[in-house]
Length: 295
Image 1 (spheres, helix red, strand yellow):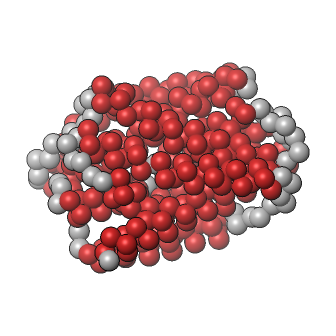
Image 2 (cartoon, rainbow, N blue to C red):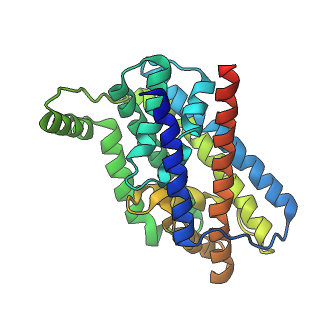
């Protein structure tokens, strides 16, 4: 990866982010009812983004590609807005490309690991979602969907079926033999707590955001709705960054928690700007770290 490639990558992702926000009209600032809860929500949000570099680092370590935590954070932070580029593939390529350049590791191998990282994020998100839906009596409506998606992800992560299919496709198209490796069951279980920690921090932040924007006392478990909405938002390929999808799911989840449709819609739309502030935080943190290391 050339040195200028990352710069162009950042510019393109920022452009698609701006276009997506304008097209969906999701730049919305609501009335703040409890400012202290908003401060708490931002604390957990920012902490969650910092901790999101831990799973990626440990995925690399367990695959004999050790990296510094700072480099893991930079690779995620500088490419965080790539999720808004249609196709989702750039979310996988971005962090892998930075690490490959910095450590001179195999780009194809790191891309495979980055894919596994994304899959485990979804897998753990669905696990947390099931607990939240169970507590709010939502499994009757969503239980079958979660079970099917979780089963598909489990097969994808823990067997060679998916990885072998990708290897075959690459061989057929590019006439190259590439072994797409995967993490073992034991390694995935060992690093799972890091993924769950990240989701829990974000979900806690979302709970406090909800309480900052409403006078209704919501159950704490309603915060897990963010894991549910975020997971399905990532899985919908046609919606860059899950824009529109995540908000719609959050409305239904918050209504199960006791809010009316109007308040739920207001909070769900506000959550986009809230989460975007976290993405901006990790992006600028990564920029500062990268410039510091250059000096």
